[in-house]
Image (cartoon, rainbow, N blue to C red):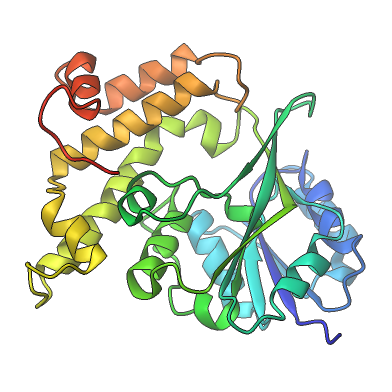
Length: 316
């Protein structure tokens, strides 16, 4: 088997407590065509010393101030030459031998994207959930409230670069943005799912998905507003039964509808898992942040609307 070049981009800033495990999880697999790229944002902790220890295994690395995570990933994309590509944040890590699994799936020339499973760990790794991307038909659900395991979602580079560079105005859901644009163009064609665990996600207090969880909705709202606007500006027939046109034109996603839906999705998720992803009940501090981040009349109105007690958009 000819092993394709796999480009792994690791953006990092002051993640010295975790980055060694991230780098080792890539290097220790001994995959013969690994292209490891590390973009550090000018860390002031021990990160740079750790990166230097592994510099012989890293194709390119830099430590300099940047404009945030999306900008760092874009810098890495510019340096990449692989046939398969993804980014792995410096507090996450790949599963052992996952690179070989990924290469095997991409032997199928019809595979554009591979979606594997991720383990979600709390800070001391005493508890984890195994989850996969829930990005499947029906299309409205996938666009509005899909769950996306980014470090276990690998792209054929030629396809990935159709939808990059990442939008640097997005700080939390840049992965959902490129996914949304992919399914707007290709639908669900070319997406391969596998049962193997490909990555591990670490939930800790400094992680965006924990400390800034309540801010994710603003990025998602911006993404979906862009989808809606793209159709309003196009010359599509509003009576068409094209699934995407149906979603945008007939589901009536006004700005307020989308904002309320996003709050509802985030709120329900916080009740299902606490802020570290554990099935132990809600984190009320995070719920409080959600409530003050969205200009809602009452929680009752939101839950009533999306449970069908009042007229509102349906996403089934």
